[in-house]
Image 1 (cartoon, one colour):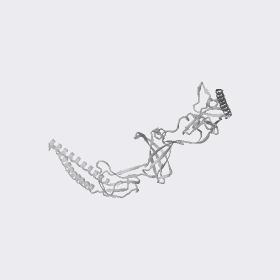
Image 2 (image 1 turned 90 degrees about the vertical axis):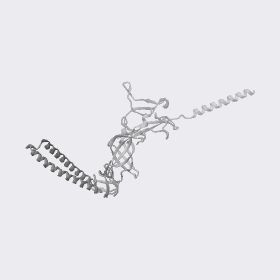
Image 3 (image 1 turned 30 degrees about the horizontal axis):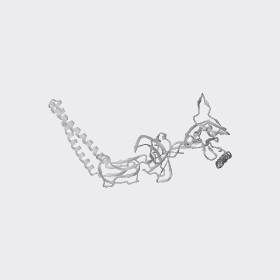
Image 4 (image 1 turned 120 degrees about the vertical axis):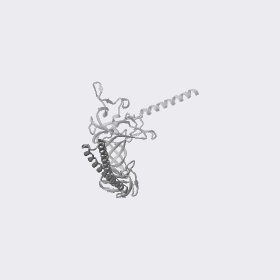
Amino acid sequence: MKKQSKWMIAAIVVVVIGGCTWYFMKSAPKAQLVVKTEKIVKGDISNIVTATGSVEAITQVEVGTQVSGIIDKIYVDFNSVVKKGQLIAELDKEVLLSELSSVNADMGSAKTEYEYQKKNFERTEQLYKKELVSETDFETASYTYQKAKNAYEKSKFNVEKAKRNLSYAMIKSPIDGVVISRAVDEGQTVAASYSTPTLFTIANDLSKMQVVANVDEADLGEVKEGQRVSFTVDAYPNDVFEGIVTQVRLEATTTSNVVTYEVIVNAPNPELKLKPGLTANISIYTTEKKGILLVPAKAFRFTPTKEVLGENTEIVPVEQKDGKDSAKHVIWQKNGNVFQAKNVVVGKSNGVSTEILSGLKEGEEVIVEVTASSGEVVAKTADSSKSSETSPFMPQRPGANKNKK
């Protein structure tokens, strides 16, 4: 009797549990699908490549000296405005004047010798024609005359050289501009024996500056002459300066295995805020379009399936031509229970939005994802299964400094 009672109680418990499970499962509402769509709108799109560089004057000349000596006088200082040909410094000229006097004296001696030997040659020549002197005497007179003549010509060149060196003692500005660097003081000795020492650095026109930016090799393919540039400098954090790419230089620079190329950006500076040497944080607009039709880029990665949407929905793919799928860029639209694929022609993209050239009109809606009423995404973009998180300790792909808007 006891065994029969235990089996009867166990059977009743199983029946009760099964009945409750069936009841609650039957009464639980089925999750409904929510199709998320977005409208085709007009807007702006731009891609940006960022880099850093330095502000420089477009024309910058280093003024030096070709002769050695002591700086006697300096007539300009930092930030002095100078004109082309203006005297800006003088070297001590005593040694140079002595050299000039010496070569002048040498030239005088050479001239006297030349004139004497010339007259002697002319006399010997006349006597030789009358056969009053030997051929040897005539050749000796001719040789001595030519030698004296060459010595006299050389002495004249030495005088011109001494005069030119004396003129080099007067340091003049080669261009109109502003002195941005002065490397010497009065009384300082400069030696020009092996290399030309730099005395001053003069910038031509500070109202027209340029930025020499170092662009990563991964971004260089998108940078072209004529593209718009905006940049900031730490000295004026609230000001945004504008410029244009004027040159993409071919010479590469490798630093710590990172390859960069110099990109030159002109930078108008009417208010003279930009100073030579400032660090500029630049943004190069490699793509810039305004007032174009835009669609979310993730809409192109959405693909509906019967397993997700259920048997009550109809999926209409893009029409095929000649047995081949002609679709390259497909957008999905919903009309009731019908999911219709549409082939479109796209233009530029910044990763968030994509330009539509044809196939859709402004105001049309496209599907971007399908979610359950509980909020769970049941049909989404093809890339959603991949984690977008990356470790901050892992190395990044070169060119990761590219920003998009």
